[in-house]
Length: 339
Image 1: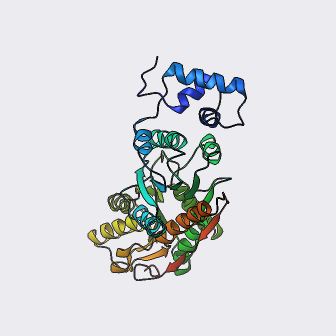
Image 2: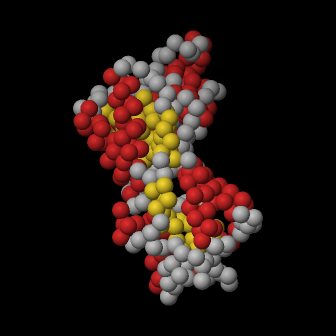
Image 3: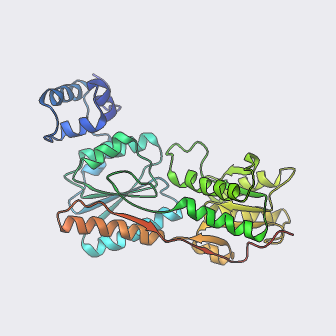
């Protein structure tokens, strides 16, 4: 028998030669599984000693009227704002909120496996910037847990997100209209293990804006900042070390933009005369440092998600909801024409 601490729902799926979604349906006794398949899955689970992992055990200790919020960056400002929006709605409606960090592929697999095991104890899931595999989407869609994704979207699951491509184009177009032609990009995480849509969609918007302006994308101007102030500092230092640095930088989060701005000032550059900087989110500190940014409202996104779940639970419905978050360019004092 395998070590039960290491056995996952994926192991059972491999042993039974079926998908994770089928394992989930079979072990939960759903009707749409052939009798022979159910027996094969149950036998594989028994032979492997499949039990819920520690995360599942923690979730199983929950109670009814509980909504779980899973976030990929539990320490980030954006995630905290989303959770705040969720909690405000759920508290008023009499629901509890449980927040879980899901920081990588293995944690995500365990979390989804946990969700499939706890479906009678948890009423809903809000998943923030978590990239799911197709079989995981199928498995969640087949449960009676109301699930809403924020930042990513999948067929059959409700979602809340901005049009990140258009929003990034809006930021870069602002710099182009000011006359900048050499524009750096500080994007998300290198080889992002969660493959979040936010990073690659905002990069796509950056590239589209430059291409439409007849500018060839220069890979030397693309650097990662890990969605942190420190990452933004490192990225800007690398950009300024180029033989021909950019005259402007678009960072796909305000935290990275503020780190980048700080390094530019430390190296003697004037903002915005020598270097223009644009961020994304409208973090509370963005106004303090007069940062030009793309504004969105993560608290409202969390509230949207929670409201849908509560309404569906009250009406005993499983409706499919989608909401495109409004964004706007907020021009402050970190952008100007190049000298």
